[in-house]
Length: 396
Image 1 (cartoon, rainbow, N blue to C red):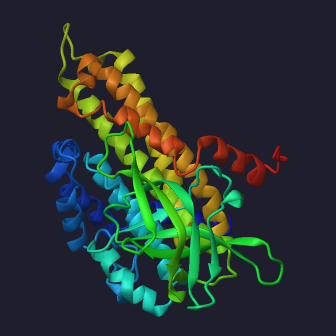
Image 2 (image 1 turned 120 degrees about the vertical axis):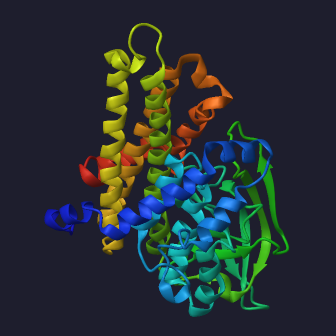
Image 3 (image 1 turned 135 degrees about the horizontal axis):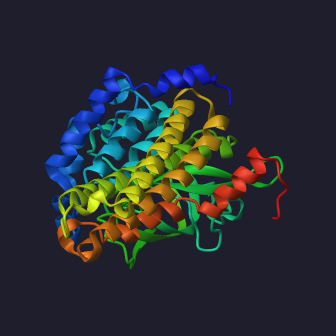
């Protein structure tokens, strides 16, 4: 890591501004709460009221440059927003994609015209953007992506062909940032490039995937067959390759960690409230160590995961992309494990009540698995750490 421990230690002491942000977002989240979220899901709607209010208050674009309507802060602040909304029971999953991945990539690598076109709307919530990288036959192997872009000699633009799966929120997004591949002019080898594809572009088709997941954001397959794009749909340098891609993937991992931590905090808060008041014998059930200790352990593991998430965000905001990559993967792994464990323990604490709609925990049993699976599996993170951190040989 390129940052010294003293700098990071100071960063862990949240500033007055960050504490104020955490409190303000928490208050907003609790005004909507879990009942709003679950009612929205049951009605097949989107949490538009919460999204729009968060945008108006400047929370959605807190990480984007001030000159384009953002808050001028960083990933650390954006992760606070998602964590606190999740802890209140109303997470906005599209925050992982729209301001964190797409907003970051465009802010760092986009042209001035692209920044003017997209960043103000992403910041205030009036525009939303999805992100498409996963493919049916590539899995976690980004080197096997088959979505390709080639120059259209008649227009000077691009022709994009391929398929994507598990793309969140395409139906409500104004555009999707697609990871494709172009041929290197010198070597002919394919390298990743990023393209903005607006939703109404001819030939851009999407179909919903039927999921056993209670979330307002739906999952989609994308179909692109020689979709004609203008020359300025390319984001960044055609030759930058993985640099630009991982500029978006590291924030994705940090924000997924924030999603899992917020969810875990919500579950534990419900379980603690129940254990404090539920009385079967002479004392509330929370007085019994068989109930209290697992909840305490889950809380500790969530706090530890948050420390790694804060470290990853600090490194990313400091410009240490390599250090942030390692920490972001570790944070995503730790948070997903801690979040899933917290939800499990909360449900067990409530017993049968943990599976009722009243307490809002049962649907989290599925949702908490999302962090362990997406955007990269826990096994691929263990591969990353074993190879890049520990220096062990690859088996693939």
